[in-house]
Image 1: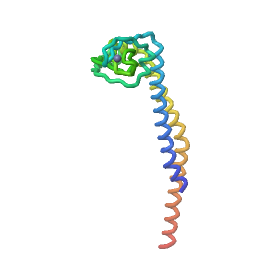
Image 2 (image 1 turned 45 degrees about the horizontal axis):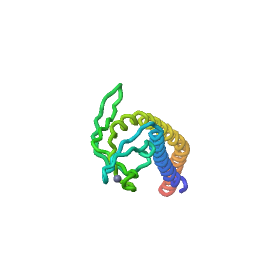
Image 3 (image 1 turned 60 degrees about the vertical axis):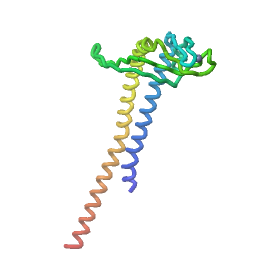
Image 4 (image 1 turned 180 degrees about the horizontal axis):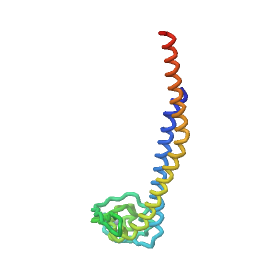
Length: 176
Ligand SMILES: [Zn+2]
């Protein structure tokens, strides 16, 4: 009986761990790209949607703001052997602290396409790096689990074979 439990539990545990690993890698990817962008020497020119005041925010402040609304198109380009998704923003707004309103208000980021072009390469490098880490870690995890799973499956197969033999013996005793 315990063998059947192990046969069910092992893949479930592996699945949960794999999912956790994927979530961890995605969170790291987002965190590190934000950190890389925040460290860049970019100034964002923004304009408050409520009062119309134009002001500047730092790259760090730009990445700190979560609320955003945008309108963009994505064009896939083939450049130096790889496909690149190039995003063109028509409008991009984020919530920043407006110095005139004295509150967090949506502000249009005027130079969003420039920011997007500058940040694309570093975020792509980080993205590829974490994708590779994610795949290698996932394969290692599956390889690690394949060892006990192999033995459990073998033991279960042996057990089933033994049961069949016993049933056969029983039948033979009954009829012959
Ligand atoms: Zn304002």
